[in-house]
Amino acid sequence: MKSDGEIMEILAAYDRTGSFRAAAELAGCSHHTVAKHVKARNSGAPIPGMKPRTKITDEYRVIIEQLIGESSGLIRADKVHEKLISMGYTGSERSTRRSVAELKRSYRLGNQRNHLPWVTEPGLWLQYDFGDGPVVNGVKTVLFVAWLAWSRFRVVLALPDRQGPTVFAALDRTFRLLGGAPTYVLTDNEKTVTVMHVAGIPVRNRSAVTFARYYSVSVLTCEPRDPATKGGVENAVKIAKADLVPTETNLRPAYNSFEELEEACDQFMAQVNQKKHRSTGQAPMDLLTATEQGALHRIPDEPFTLALGESRKVPMNTSMISYENARYSVPGRLLGETVWVRTVGVGLQATVVIVHQGVDGPEQVASHLKLGPGMVAVKSEHFSGNQEQKIPGVKEPKPRTQAERDFCAIGAGATTWLCEAAAVGTDRILVKMAEAVSLAKLHGTAAVDRALGLAATHHRFGYEDLRSILACEVVGNQPVKHQGSEQSSLTQGTRSWADFGATEPTGEQ
Image (cartoon, rainbow, N blue to C red; front, top):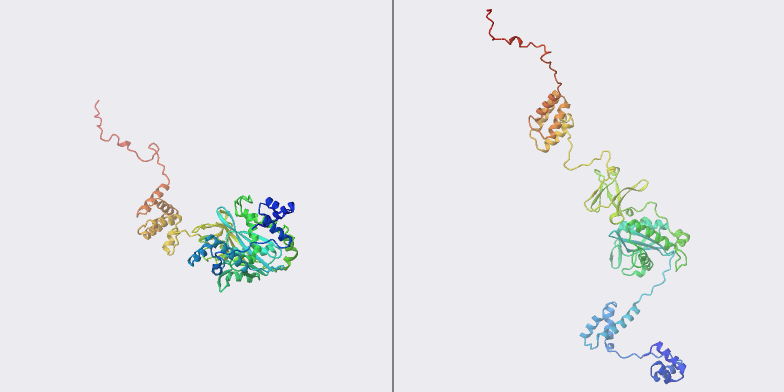
């Protein structure tokens, strides 16, 4: 059968030559073919089509239609061919594939949904969805895209994840960028919104219900696996990813930090919202500020608490909270208070932000670099006043009896001696402490305190060690006595005894 183009060439050749054979020679076909098409044109009949031929699959047509219907048009042709072979089919697999393709087209045509046009109103619908964001410092990010249906205004935010507090914080920021909240918010069946389906009815997440009540909006979800119900935001996600995610087509360089990605999102929003939309012929920013913003209802001045992050209760005995298996310090004035924690940024630049809801509204009270499990982040300014840091194994003497108080009152050397002597298991330590108190009354607390300090330094905890050290200290501190020489001394000498026992003179001359 000739195609439409070939038939037009045959008729054109006949018009130039006026001969069936000459036209056939020019067109490369039989002169009978030329005569047939010329006759059909002169009689005003349409171009003849090919008569349907009998196929080997015709007697199995009902079976193939049944298999396609049972599988909702998803069964493969090779599986159909296997079933037909078992029923005595002798045709080729190619014939089966052609028949299956033809019947699948008919099935889709008969089951195709015919969507009514969606006529929106100002301030009525907001749709949001997520897209895979760029990788920043080896960590994946998420693009949050919200689309205001009437004005086509788009909000694109960079998120570290798709958890509930993060999503609620993004929605809160979206409402504030729009200048209010719409009546309906439509999204996918995320776990943050829908926890399960029962008989096709979505069961809402309690946090989403509380969020919707707080902002006076209705959070709705589309049909599962049916993106056609929110095609506007789906297209907005596709455009945002094509511009913001670095690829070979947009030649965008990789982001060095999460802050760079956030800045790129702001620039993208300013660009697309100030450009004329092909459907409305106006810029979304102009439609929002001129008309739709007045139809949005006011939102609370303070954000929803879950938008601030996950709640944590600060213990009464330490200003430390636990978040994702790590511990972070908060100001000591928040003992016993409730704070909210969330992560901002990704990778090495990820920061843990801690917010407290006070009388004047939410206030950021602390921020730390995000740590791994089991790690601790402490800021010294968070521990002041009566708060002290306890180090295991390090204790200070706290005397309870009068004897203990008397010994510790000697001085720092005494407390050092007690800690060191206790650490090495000194025996009869109470007796030695009482002896030190007695020596302090005799020689003074200063000398005994120095002696105890020396004993602790050199680990001398014996029975006579303190007395020995104290004796050296006392002798070394005595003043030096000046002695007179032999010439100036008043002591009687031994000169008169020098000649004792010598021979006396006889007196003879």
